[in-house]
Image 1 (tube, rainbow, N blue to C red):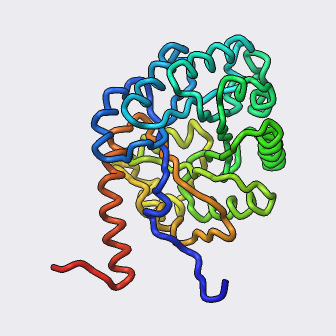
Image 2 (tube, one colour):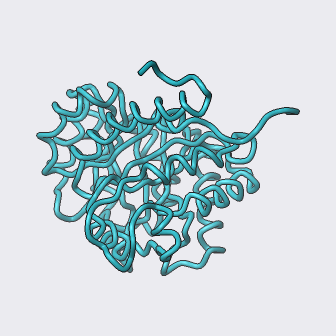
Image 3 (tube, helix red, strand yellow):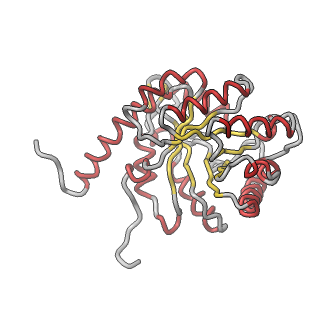
Amino acid sequence: MPGTRPGTSPDALLAGCSLGMTWKELGDLEQARAVIPPGTRINVGFRDNADMAMRVTMARAIRRAGFFPVPIIAARRLLSEEMLRQYLAELRAVGACGSVLVVAGDPDPPRGPYADAASVIGSGLLEYHGVREVSVAGHPGGHPAVADGVLWRALAAKAAALEQQGLKGGVVTQFGFDPHEVLTWLAEVRARDVSVPVWVGVPGPAGVRRLLKYASLCGVGVSPAVARDYGFSLDDPSGEAGPDQFIRALAAGYDTRLHGEVKLHFNTFGGFAATTEWLGRFRGRSELCQAEANGDGLPA
């Protein structure tokens, strides 16, 4: 439209954000109620160090705390169709199967009958057990073991499978440190007619060494220039870094006409409490910055 400019407030991107948490952080849920809104989406991991009972217990606790559990299903970690059926049935029994995040998972070869996320979505088991919304993975920075062309075809296949099964969709991306890379990828997603909401993966506040450790484990690249813009140095990885500058840059470059519906997902790296506390502080600071940018200011 004439006269419109790209850009939004950081708080607009924070609305509807989601977080990840681990089994060891269940005790932090009560504290989180004071700083993040009820109904906030919290992902339930699907790793080998947590069995099915632990995952279901996490989902139940998240729901009882007033938040919205989003269990992750890692296709290649499923040992059998029966394992998937049982997990979905137990989630449904505790009222935690409305929305799931389906990812391919790391094992190669797969440990059971599901080679990728699309095969889980196409099984028909999700909607049979009451799932109505399915998010899938996206990779703005690429994947160290998968060519970009394969990633784009996989995203298209997952979007098509969701449409075929009549499921509401979404995309949750791998975390990264470069907002310009994310915005370029989002524009390409929309150009490829994938119109579902996207939750952009954001690192929660953490020690720089911890951030770099997880970046290495997840195949996330970070150049000296990107690190500097994010707020840390590769030459001196001491101290901590938060996503403040990343989120502000993402908000400044966001254009709904190019990028569609965008939210944020915080990868907490075992720092769920630190991330929720940061969210409470950042909302106040971003409101002040926005007021100053608009010339409104606050009384001294």
